Length: 610
Image (cartoon, rainbow, N blue to C red; front, side, top):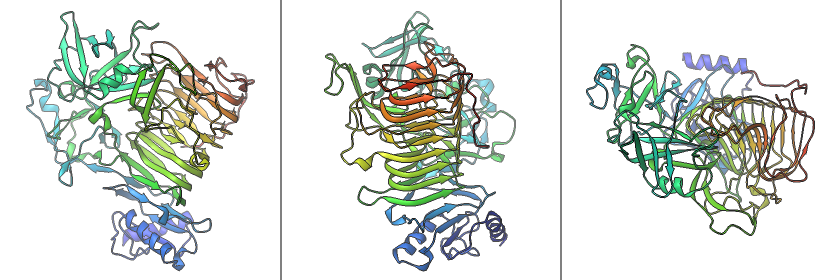
């Protein structure tokens, strides 16, 4: 009963109203056959949602006011995504609220623990002097299948996959050959010819590619020639933008090898073997791995809010809830070649005869797919996240995908995110060529009236360097205000898509009062604030942008505090503080107005404290 007493005390202290519409949940002391009262809590969030759904269906008295699903502190492990549907919708006077009392740490997790570690192994792929230092465990099972992973967390910190170099260190390639689809690089000095799961991570201007190695052979000149599996091999060598650079102003593009047991040679590194699933870890200290918490993610998506155009989901709020341990597996299965912003290519090639009806000078075409995300929202209205924590997520953190309106993300922390922290709006995918302006047949399909305010975003883009802190595609009436965005490998806040001067519905977007710093850590063609295409009535004002990093492996120094990329128009840009106002311009439109910006601008930012 101690769990119940503690939960009751926290609820009283936090000011959560006691009413008949409360459903209580405890991961450690609950039972899904209980009644969900404070004295007899449920165990899972899914069961609590079902109870609330039934109250609404039956028009029970409990649904006359807000229905609160109140989570006790603890980890709520999911074996499948939480699915919120139109039947879970609240109303303006009776929202569905999933919350935890202030001071508690309630986490919706897609992770599973790795147990049963043994010290030492005799695998010949590991050098003899290290074999006694390596700990080994079998991957846990999900049903009757081994869990595969690209992420591993030890005592709450992400571990480094076995890699050729220390984190962030790369080497310059020798040649990039599009005719025979190979990359030539210096001999790695480690025999990787039998490393069946080896990957090559390639730096290419404003994006990265993760390529599964098919063959690696010596060329007799101190180099090795590397070829790759399809589909990524075809994509990598056929698509013109972006490709690696040879003989750039700062030298050739760079790379590193990863994901081979032969490369497991530094404390803090790990590797998962295939098909055995066995996990190898080289700890930083002599502690027993069985005394440490080791977690790998089971799910790519933790929560999905999914309505339809005819029946949207509405009036659902998440308050003071954590979301942790979502995976990102697709590169292990088909590689990862991107166009921009983490959007992977489905097909792309150079046009022999340029031109589309919408863009006469276009010399390439590309079709893309949206990145995976831990929390997704589609066809919804009034889906809010307040004071929530998003941590240890392999791809996108939170994604408002399509037809989302009147929603807000406020006071949240996004930390250790593999891709983009917060993403919203249409980035036309599937069969929609990405340079064709997106003008929805149904106007409400465009995401609109979304507020992203007073959030802290740090250490995002740490798996796909080409992602961003906050990314918005085709959106309108969006406010991005008073956020702190930092420690990124590419751009900070990005709004717009399409590379088009045509009007497409993007308009009235406001980027105000943010602090963007320590960005462009690895890639270039970046902006602390970055815009694309025509967005009438939009504003960039009152932001502080500083600490632009001189990316060590960029092949030129093209990065800006504010970057108006192709066809940016319709913005008024004034009162932004930055070390210098020499912004980037790529064919801007005639209605882009840039006023006074620079080091002399005085600001009094209202930033969150986290």
